[in-house]
Image (cartoon, rainbow, N blue to C red; front, top):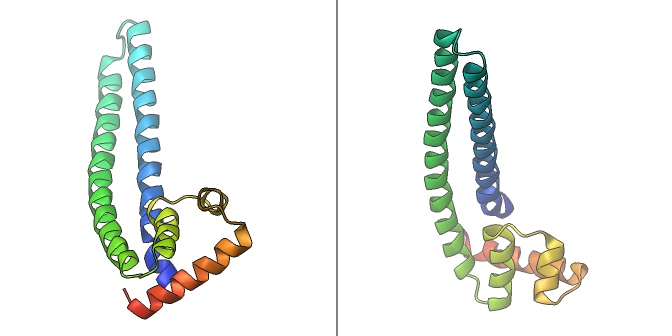
Length: 137
């Protein structure tokens, strides 16, 4: 695994968590619609609607369990990334790495916050990665 792959693990897990949260929101919306339909028709097909609701709830619970596991994995990865970043001696390079790989900020925002243009920021990033390569992960 390259240094960049190591650093980007958290970003991928964070995206996966957000995707699952979106799925839960969608399932909640579906459950609300099913409840509304059930109430509007006076419960004429209550068994079917109850089964649909149960299925939706089970899916939501499964996703919630997956999210909990992903969060635990994300915390462990962030700890490892933090340890690697702290091994870099230059505080400026540490800040750059933290903003990019722990806060997942876009390059433009990091450049703005640190007061650099993008080309200089990318040079600093290359230097930071080189420092991480030396300290190993």
